View 1 (spheres, rainbow, N blue to C red):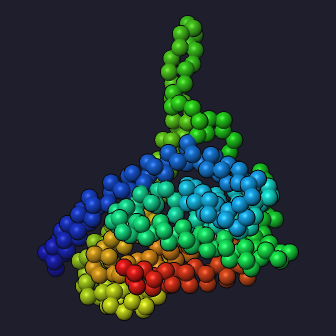
View 2: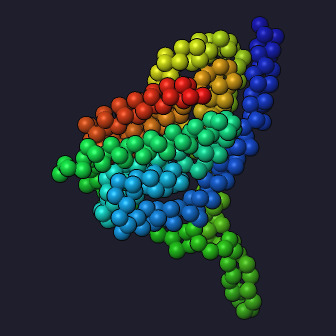
View 3: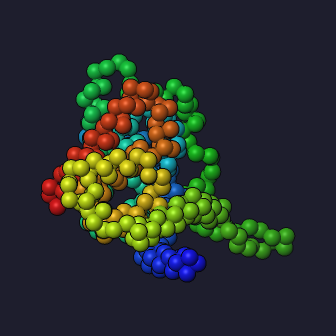
Length: 326
């Protein structure tokens, strides 16, 4: 019995180490890029959406709004107060819908994570998430433009709640600053923005690291104990059923983007269709528990149900189309 356990531990460690070595570089780059964007670019990114207010873009404003949402490094609990402040400043609901949908589905850090899945999957993820955000904005525009009631309800937020903590060094300046010593000479000390960068990196590692390791472990377990024909049968052979299954399991399984990348990598290698993977990477982040909790605050029951139905329908149709084309 002990020999069997030892043998299985060795097998699992072998699969774990291979998977870890294949993907850890993408995870580390994602951590760094996400932290750099958060410290140096967050305010500029959000101000770029506010700057669109004076431009007569009409419904076409959903395109840059979605791109800005994808570029935003904030989680949904950070995005909702920002969107509330934008709403108070006159940003249209359709633009906000595109911005928030893009922010839910993708961010700079997750883009680099997804590069581990290969260029085809990365391209499909970026394009489908972009189209999903635009579609959400268009639907809000056409179904709510003549209604007096807004699709969103930001009454529980104030304008001050839509901004991060005041910090004059945020995203600005160099990483060192000069200070006068008692003898009048100058010495270089770490600039506050450098400390914020280190804190951001450490925070991202703490948040995503455990999920990343769990994802690699689950991938090793799948590789050792789940035959490839099972993956093919559920997610590859019957396209429509596999896509529906992938869209469905994305709801309870998806907890962290970094944690699901190793699983997707293993499933794709075992025969999962690209369409099924597409459905999973849309419904997963869109219906993640933390994201749903934040969205429920501003959507209400009816809007919340519409949102869930839209995400599942879009994921299913996108998966079918991807399998049809590719």
